[in-house]
Image 1 (cartoon, rainbow, N blue to C red):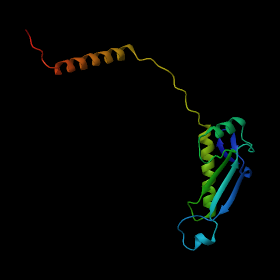
Image 2 (tube, helix red, strand yellow):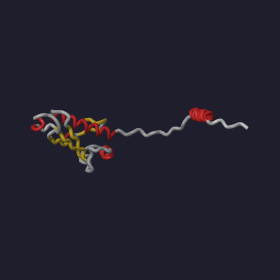
Image 3 (cartoon, one colour):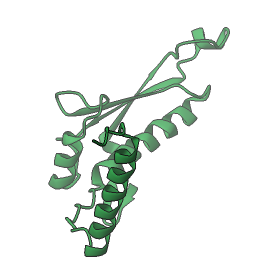
Image 4 (cartoon, rainbow, N blue to C red):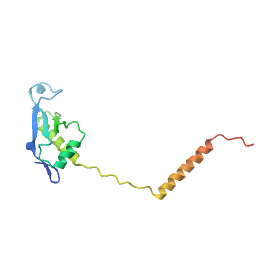
Length: 139
């Protein structure tokens, strides 16, 4: 069980790992050893609370498929164990991101003093612009 936040835990038995060959440079090792990891996590089949599942599905993240399966590919390290730990950490980070609710904005009104300052600045700016105008003929 991996702690996510407070009373919410991730059961590692619900996470499916598939070992694949990593892409990119790595010499002969890359052709022989399956060091990259595909992590699959079915949101609906998990034991997470329903509100967490809903928040996770509502995240606009390309790692979440239309079927509600989180797919994370980890291949940063040459070690399978490190890639597995990295993929799991990224899943936990995604779950924490789903739990973060933005604080709703409270509408505020400008103070009377700030309104006065704004009007004074506008008046002063208008005076400056008036001085830039062409001088008309006085008859």
